[in-house]
Image 1 (spheres, rainbow, N blue to C red):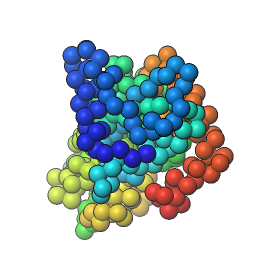
Image 2: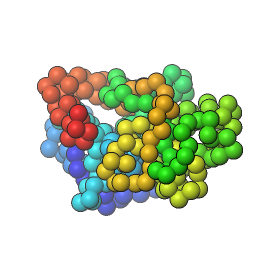
Image 3: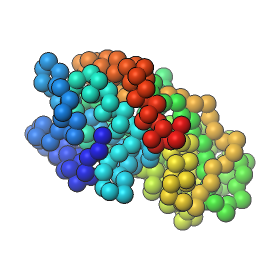
Image 4: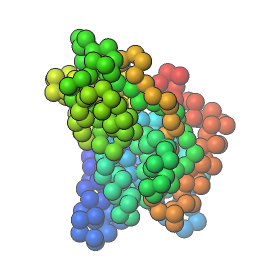
Length: 268
């Protein structure tokens, strides 16, 4: 689905205001552009949080529309299952916080399904895309692997799988980890020389290098084992939303819509 960024920002601001003041102001935010979908029996409009920039899964295109694989998959599932939702473009950390505080019902933001997250309260859907994490450096860098990182600093996104991956290697290879709020800021830190390398989801870095021409390159042999992305809730009372997501995901995979979405963004 596509939605003008201004409307998204307004929605995000209302959610944050509700979180700070406890007034429930987020309930007045406008529904997303899938309003044509038939609402469920309760008439509920589900509040779904997402990241601000995680191309090609969620990002703002050249026309100012908020788009991406996650947006299209959620929209297709909502139409298949007949429920309404409202997108809240908050950022990675803020999306988690909004869900934990009850200001959002669920989250779709390229979140890898892990046992550690499940143990800490995440409740995941079935996986909808497999991805791994790897390392990238500035295009002219001589860094060819982890062994070249001794004494250097690497960039990661706070609370992400890429952060966990980098942290697991830091002591062994003698580098430090610097934390950022989003992928574009990390990439600029690499290009600008503030850090020697960046750890992030491989398809995200590959898409940015290909589409934007940013002066970075992936480092061969640095990827970990892939894990599936999942839609997530943090309150078992919202299990209905996960159940609908799973049913809808199975249906759009069966009818070809899922493959159509991936081809649109990835050429697969």
